[in-house]
Length: 216
Length: 136
Image (cartoon, rainbow over all chains, first blue to last red; front, side, top):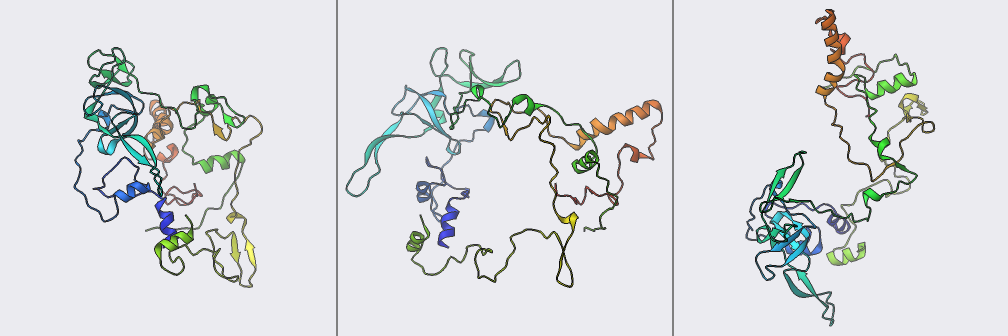
């Protein structure tokens, strides 16, 4: 059971309904230490926010309204929807030692603590003050976040891809289909199955029908 | 993280009982198939007769002249706007115009719906729709 147990740890983690989500991802060693299989903790109550009402995204600039760093503005580096958490870069920090081994005490680093969504507010880019935000539709039909105080649209932050590719500046290689060829509509609806169309196109004439089969 | 450290952690002796028993394990005379299907029939004299219809044949379009699609798609391509095909859409695009034309001409025949594509039974067809007897 040992090797297969090891391999199973890398597979998708099944999480029970009362799982307590933390700042580490459920498949990491730290999260598994916090939530061993038989452990039952007091249930943490999370305000239910509908997916369509969620307005904070990774990369947004927000201002902290409560806590140690209240009044400061920072960029969101991580969003944990399961607990309505938002982790900002360099704000709401506490200090800890990491990488302790033997006699070496480890490196002293600042680690950010999560904030609830109700304790932060999005910053209006026109006057750089915190505002309440609502989802509305533009005249084109696009769903955008609108600041309630000034009416300015808050664009969704552009997240850079991890592989560093910027789609607008991509140069096609020899094995890349160009966007026009990929989006060309060549499908014509017909009542024949794909196999029947190919048989017709290649001139395959098959008069033998298969053996009679039954299903129940 | 190897097998040895896993064993040392478990502190229990013996082989890994839960590992899959494949054709790669077992002795020289051990035979086990890994899912490949037979392409013919074994006769009573022991000879294997291959049946051409059971051998899979890949039908590939001509890739040399005027074929514009390549293995990968450029990052610049936006997500497509075509909706997935539904039976309702297929009927509206293919069958409905034919029926409308016949009604206008006055030759619509409600007893002979086979000429608009109705198939009352799948018997006699090579590629039956239900139960589906083709791979795709």
